[in-house]
Image (tube, one colour):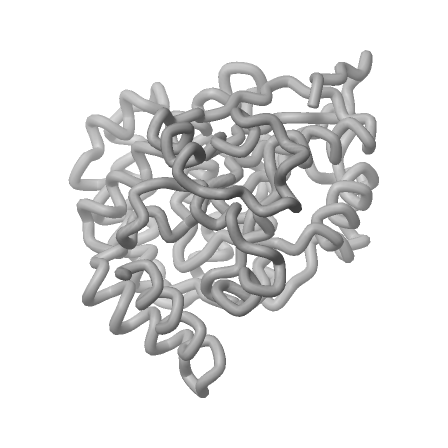
Length: 312
C-alpha cells in the first residue's frame, strides 16, 4: 500500500497552493533526505560513470551543453564545468535551482576531492580551487556567471531558436520519461537544427515504474493500468510517466535519422518475474517481454553519418 499512499499524497500536493514547496521542504529535505551529503555523493557517483562514458567517445572540453531538467542544483552541471565545457544552457519547466543545495553539493565534492580529481583526471589543487570558487558565490547570478550558465525556467527546449547549430551535447538524466510523447517528438525533431554538425544527445531514460521503491519491489506494475486509470494515479507534475518503452525511443531517433552511438539497457530479473504475476494491459501487449521489463535505456545519438538503425 505504500506506493498508493505516495501516489495519493503527490496527487494532492500537485493541486494545492505551495504544493511543490511542501514537497521540497518536508518530503524531499526532511523525510527522504534526498539532499543529504550521502545522497548527493551517491548521485555524483552514478552520473559520473555516464559522463565519463560520453567523454571517452566525445571529449567535453570546449563543448556547448544543453541540459534538460537540471533540477535543484544539477549534479552534472558542476562536472561539466570542471571538465571545462564552454557553456551550459539549462532548460526546465519551472525554476527549481537552489544555491544552498549547490553549495552543499560543492562542499560534498570538496570533502571527496581526491576521488573527484581521480575521476576527472585533474589535479586535486585545481579541483579544490574551482569548487571553492563556487562556494564563494553569494547569489544565483554569481554562480551562473562563474559557470557560464544560461538558465531558462520556465523554458521550452524545443522552442529555443537562438541555439540553432550551436549545441554540442543535449543531456538529460532521468527526465525524458516524465515528458509527454508529443512534446518529445517535437523536441527530437527540433533538436536537429539546434545541434552542431557533430552534436549529440545523451539521455538516461528511466523506463521503470517510479513507485518501485515505495513498496512495489518491481518496475513494471504500471503496465497493468489503462491510460485513464494511470492518469488518475500519476497524471500530475510529481508523478507523471509516459510509460513508453525502449523500442518507442529507438523508433523516435531512427525516424529522425540520428546515428546511434549507444543504446544500452538495464534488464532486471525482478521485473521479468513480476511480469509473470500481473496482467499487462492490452495497450502493451504488442511489446516484447524484455522490452516491457527494461528499467533503463542509456541512449546516445547524433547527426554524424552514416546513419545506423538499431532493431526496435
